[in-house]
Image 1 (tube, helix red, strand yellow):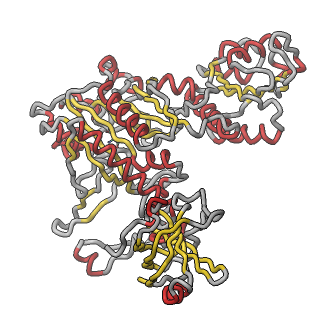
Image 2 (image 1 turned 90 degrees about the vertical axis):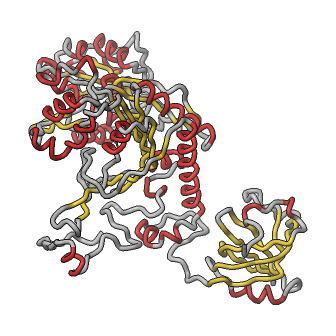
Image 3 (image 1 turned 180 degrees about the horizontal axis):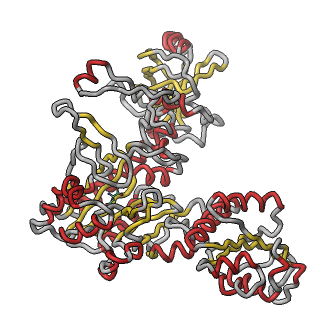
Length: 603
Ligand code: ASP
């Protein structure tokens, strides 16, 4: 090794030792003839002092050094002079008195600061990712990611799981997104699909008797990218035979609990993880991935509103809908403008409008008077009714109530979004808490209004609840699934389900999804056939590694926990991928490019 120690490991116990350090010039300062170089490697930073009186040569060499040069430094570890220690640095008690220096490779001036946390254009960061990763924050994220994945691997290995690799060149396996296709050269006109997940493969491994499988699996989904999406992402993918829902939930709870307790013990972890049905979280939080670090729950107030003279709400209820509300603590003083913003948010989520009612700070609920409630709908609602509404929502003096009426799905979605927004504005969530929970029994199917047919809510291999199988024929929308999500602080971290393992039921579900028997055979014949060879009952789950690391690292986007991510336009600025293929490549692949009338703008 060119180096004897890692820069970041030096402590006062090394004083007197000769060390060889190699790394990058993090910072360089001249002080009255002395040169101070902070040298950085992956482990951290150490201060090296060049004194012309100690070594003229070394001082001369170090004088050339600039930031981000790759250098080799030798010298003796010494205690820093009293008063110059740096308590914020693990190596802050010592410095290295240099007697030799060598430039291993100079560096151009980097396009952004590496030795300072500074808002930097993300395009630049991605184009020079190898410099971006030199920044301690990015390095820490990648190291944490490694520890998390290693912990998961070890956890599963200790429980008799076997990691099996599955192919990347395969056939479409649907998770509800668009496939990435790879043209086949050898078989003209045919395409592989990159796996949206190893779903069918892991199920086939259960048929194959592997019993407990996992894989740190790359998944590819050609979706429009949002803040926390990437065209390729990583899951810890798990499948088990002879299990029921609770077995999988317990495995996940155990894995995440031990992960947090050993790898990121700074987080406050709420245990045990509660379980809620989909219906319950939609009713109470208006979201299937609720942030449970705060309350502010939604309540149905249809019974009270139907007694008022408020026509809009009364007709919503008569039309089979509901009126629901929530109470935002301490928001009675919200200005017209602030309220209008919330109304706009409600409308953007599909509400016709939103009604607010502020309860004056000095009011008492028992002695509430009409003047103490400020609401554009005051004339329709009596004081007694306001009281009943406030009691139902748990509103107190100084709070603002918000009400939305209409179809229950819409009301839930709108109030769920308002809850998230108010939670953010009021900083209701403790930023040091990881609040995990499981959501179970999602609907099996979702109505696709555009194509006028049912889609699988999770994926088509998910088993219906036994009690609901009979509804598949007549009332498919009512069928609940043996499916579950692991949710944390408002994010979906993992999804999974108990699978169908019998051919007839799988075919019945494909029929409910409007696949013809021929289509089913062409797309999934291999799976249906496998089910005829003694397929065991099985189920599994997949957790997003990127999102897990993002949350635990307190990173803002998943791009910050991925070494070489893509931009929102699925572009890699470092390699400039995707890129144009040569005529010859296209010919070999039997492909012709049809030019768009207007080529998409560069990202
Ligand atoms: N394959 C599913 C997904 O990627 C997870 C599962 O059902 O295990 O969401």
